[in-house]
Amino acid sequence: MAIKIEDLDQATATQEQPPRSLNSKVKVNGIKFTNAATTPIKMFWLDWKGNPVSYGVVQPGSQMSMNTFVTHPWKATGMNGEAMLINDAPIWHPAAADANTEVFISAPAAAAPKSVTEILSYNERILILSFLKWHLKLITEQQYISEYTRLGFTAQSI
Image (cartoon, rainbow, N blue to C red):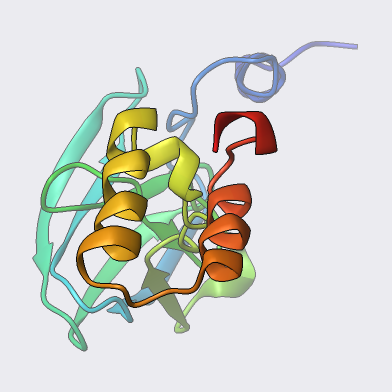
């Protein structure tokens, strides 16, 4: 049985390598990249070596129509290079069945907000609590202790 170069390309692409275009055999016409994000995005085709090739900017709510090929991966970034999602994936790989369809570009889900102890230093937290307690008299002693504990302090440090 003879092994085709394309089969080797496909096998190689699936082995922990960065995504890249493999061949231009199966055309996928009429893709509409729709920017569902609230900011402009940059569209990139990943070439034969996996290098991003810019295909321009898509404004929020706008579309970019594109003909592409199966095995030609695409990615999108924000204007500052932050990764965006195409149909909920960081890299979108078109399939033959994707012809004449709309694919959506969106921002990744926001990371969980950081806790106060990750944002403020120990001294900053002390300063805020002291200000609230002693200068503004906005909180009771019990609220002070409760807030102190919530902010990551132990009873011994009060």
